[in-house]
Length: 328
Image 1 (cartoon, one colour):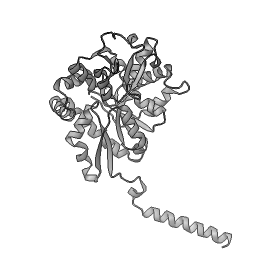
Image 2 (cartoon, one colour):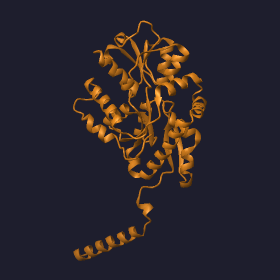
Image 3 (cartoon, one colour):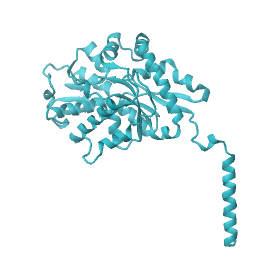
Image 4 (cartoon, helix red, strand yellow):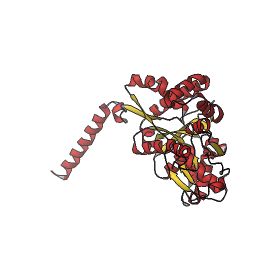
């Protein structure tokens, strides 16, 4: 074929391709609608339990033929692990844990506040442990990659200690609580509701508390999912908002659902939700940014985050606050 012939053929091919694309439905040019939305539920996220038990997302997406698949996560580390692997699309974490995961390459966006908790403290049953300094040389149960872990690092840092001054025992949150009660460890970086259970049922003591160092309960989405399906993200968050407001107005119903799932007594739930959890926020704003940034800078000072990481830029890259416009 001559050069002129090849040029004419290429032109015809381009025109035909453009014509064919023009005939395609717009929906086929966009990302395919998923067959299911995969979302976590967690005992440290009461709103997720309301969502799951009331079937609100199932009702919202039934008309689209999109199924909802629920996955339980036992801590921020598991939620972030599942998000990174693409096993879930939405995951519940602490804000600080999401930041560290983003620094480590997990392509997620923080998009919603599900609670303002005081969900972690340093816990013991050892009467000789009364302050942070008493942890030196002690076995401490902790779950890496979670707010309790970050809380522990910051607490030790505040008195001139590091994790190396203790013997960290790496366990998932429920196992950490069990190890504390059995006496396998002398202290535990706790998480509710297991922490409240240890207080109520086993006489454990929260020997160091700092509500301000608890970063917010944050819902995250896979960045790719948000890019491909922004309309679905908006709808998920609209339903999340309905569930949060329902939880605020119906405490007894939330308690019933929580107890049905966890098999924990009333007193544990009351301690977690009445004493230590607020559900009055939803939009990620300045307080959340400042809390997450402060945790990140403290971790950088402690050597957990490398010195060359731009923590503030990573916080800006992590948070996407366009999805929710009103909070109450």
